Length: 477
Image (tube, rainbow, N blue to C red; front, top):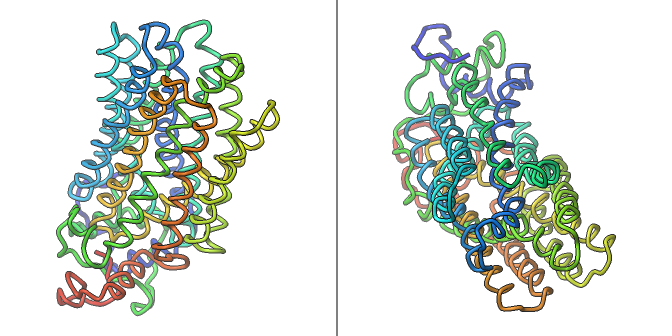
């Protein structure tokens, strides 16, 4: 199902198409597309989290200092920051499908090159380029999911996608435990080339986003996609469905910082910075920290896999919880509880304490709060700026991943107390929790069109609103 030529297959108006899309049951066509997106997103998470698995071997193979190891960990996130910040703007202008496919091909190809890196500088270069594709994928796939699933399924589908991404971390740890001891760290990068298969499948199986097509004026193509997703056309009450405008300029960072969105955008960026520091700092350094505390390398991979797998469970539960309690309290409460458990975790002794407290920290932090954060960002911004908003949010998350591994590397090199490792994660979690409670716009129970209209009404700027543009109210732009 990949319409490339406009057709008159459906004469239903754009607002009718969006109404059908939002009110549709979750069909087998939805499921097939969603599973394909999940596969790519899972592999994105897997390839990112290869870092923690290969790091001990890379240190030994290239005789790296702790500082150099921190740079190796951070260079990936530098590339991801660039990819996330630019891909969102590109996707808002060129669509979701083909930019997403290019992202998968890029990070797969550079994963294969990293497997054959002949020295430390070459490995750094390949990982930086790989990071561009990895960061870009996140910025594109989540807006795509937001725009094609039925409205009532949006939060669960978004948080489940994040769960699939998070699942890449424990799977990377388990695969590493299985193959690294016998095949070396290079084998992990060979496995990281698998997304090429998913990218090729997307070429013929993935449709373009309906909302992007409508905003771009390709109404007939959008109708073909909606017909395939939802079944035979039905006419809805025109007063009960959203309307569509195509006048807004796509992919504008300036709009993210406009009067209407400034407060929410700054809070999102701060939360993402802290969430990235938490998630990527743990993924990168936890196996090595556990090894220094007396755990064998093989066991440190296994413990990391268990602890991070509990974060996946938190993501799966988040989708149902946010539909009941709202985004604000899940975000704020999840981050704050994670911070408290991090402090307790650092003082824990024995295997049971490390596993239980570490699991609780990731359950609330990267699980409940982290997955809800991406769902919230995907809902908050209007279609013309959704990928840009999500891309810049992801870029700030990558900034956290860029900063904290390097900081930890130099902290460990200075022989600071191991407890400081966990204090750092507690602090960033508490900061994120405060930001969530102080500046979150509640999106529970609203369509993305209603959210856009309410944010504009609260901002009171009247700039670029549907009414100001001479368009109908309750407009998704």
